[in-house]
Every structure is written in C-alpha cells, then in structure tokens.
Image (cartoon, rainbow, N blue to C red; front, side, top):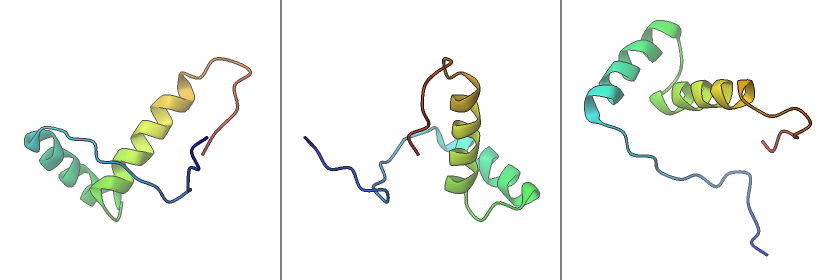
Length: 58
C-alpha cells in the first residue's frame, strides 16, 4: 500500500495560452499563484460533481 503525503503534488500540463489567461484571472481575483487559482477551480468543479455519500479526501 502506498503512503500518500498531504504535500505530494503532481504536474498537470496545459496549453500556454490557457496558462496566460489563468495568470490574468488570478491577478484580478487576488490569488497568489496560477496554481492556487487552478486548484481552487478544480476543487470547486470536483465538489459540485461528487455523488451523494462520498467523503472528501483532501
């Protein structure tokens, strides 16, 4: 069984124009980094599509 550490991270590759767009958005919304913004958005999407009865694994 693999031990998963809370601080483990992976790289997700996205097109540069999308990254640049996210960079502008994060500056306007006050996020510290594009990563913080993308994690916020992905968590929001993932939490809205969870089947009922599943637990949060953050």
